[in-house]
Image (cartoon, rainbow, N blue to C red; front, side, top):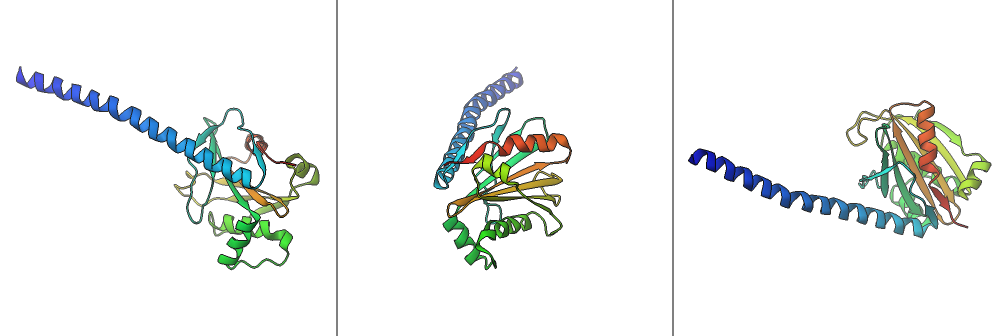
Length: 206
C-alpha cells in the first residue's frame, strides 16, 4: 500500500511541476518573440521600411551571431520553407566594410559586397547564380537597386540542413539595405511562389 501511495504522490508532484513549468516556458517563449519583433521593428524604422506580416507564415527565432546577424525569421508550416531578414543602415554598412577590410570599387556596389560576404558565411563555394533585380520589380519595393543570389548550402544544423538558399538584397541610396534569405530543399515553382510571398512583405517608404 505504501508503494502505491508513494507512486501516486510522485505522480501528483510531477503533474504539479509540469503545470508550473509549462506556463513559465510559454511565457518566456512569448517574451522572446515579442522582443525579437520589437527589435526588428526598430531596425525597419531606421531604414524607413514598411513590413506586413504575410499570411500563413509563423514567427521563429532568428540566428543572431557575428557571422549570421539576422533580425527576424519566419517559417511556412508544413511547406519546408523559411525566411530570415537582415536590416542595416548605410552607416552600419560602411562601418562593417571598414571593420572587415572589404574592398569596394564602386560605392553603388556596396550592398553586393555585403551580400557576397553574407553568402560566404553559409558556404565557401562562390558558384552562386547572381541576377540583377529588374527596374519594374524595384519599383514595387521602392528600392534603388537590388540583386538576387541563388546558392547551394553546406549541410548544417544552423540552417536546419536545407539544401538551397535565395538571398534577395535591396538597397535605398544613403539609407540602408535589407537582405531576405529564403531556404528550401526544392528549387521548383513552389519555392519561388513562397519566396515571392515572403519578400513582398517589405517595402521602402517614400
